[in-house]
Image 1: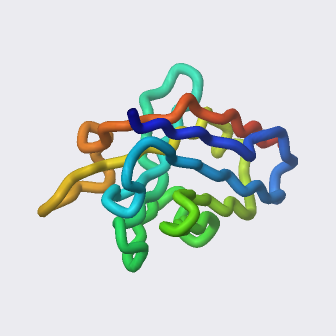
Image 2: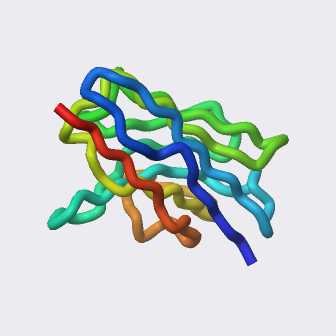
Length: 126
């Protein structure tokens, strides 16, 4: 059974940085496209960033582009999200997700991700 576990969330002041990690077990990590999503209270879950299984191509939402960087290590079965210049609007529960899709992959579509972590809270104070 594939399991995802996020870590690295916390409380940070605006302008600060956090690094989230996602550890994947029980599956073949290198076969999954990976993504980060977030959900703030009272809002729908939204795409943050995605990275293809080979790590060569990454995607970002407009709201985080230039501030967040996604990466993965297929040898260690881990994925990270480096978050810089954090703003209060980044406050949310952050979830990592794995997509076994082959062929056309819509990285922003949470319906194409089969496995999800439990989430880690990020709170940015003003």
